[in-house]
Length: 328
Image (tube, one colour):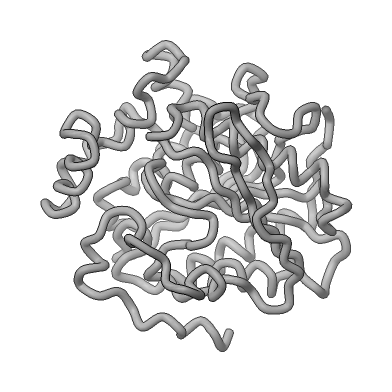
């Protein structure tokens, strides 16, 4: 892919930055747009009361299967920051979306409410609302409503896992389109949290300069992302922690899962994906884990391209061979 070498790599300052850059230079988001795709930008999929409207971008292959199988891309950012327009900024620009388009998969990249905007389960409600929107308007978009997968990284991987596992009507949410299934056919989880009760404190593994930024945003008691996303949750405290953890939602008939995780990740340890793998297999599900040798969080220290290729190959296989009922 000729455009994948457009990034010159992060500077030392960028490597220690927490959260998104202070600005996006003109063309930053546009350079993520894939070639050979029809683009439906900034579709409003939900307008939750008291919050900003939530948008998604849709890229549909100009060639290939019609209608196209589709993957919902969910960005990371510790549930605190991030955008549908920018995968991790040290990954080659365009690599994620272009790889999916080249494989014949439509991509729907979604925003969701950050944890300082709304506590859990708002983020899960938003992800489910996005799937329901895509399924409702699939014909208009050129998407197959029976072949929708989920793929996310970090906080987005965690939400993709929940999206694949949670079928409790009490956690469905009422935002956006209703009366349509939010089920997905396959899940790729890149280094997401699986069990908040076994997660080490992120405060112990962050560089001092990064910790200073988080503390400055709300004090030490509001620096840990898990604390922030659970603060003021409408769910009882014990229930919220349990329901936030994908391992507690494993059941005998989940969609197939692919977990990819760096073996030198100190922010979200590899053991988190190992726990989810065990829970899924023990429940009778289909799942695989690919440890990435030498990779820290966000695959720092390694080339992300092979992991992205594994994800796309998995999704292409699963989304062109299986279906998910579109029950209301």
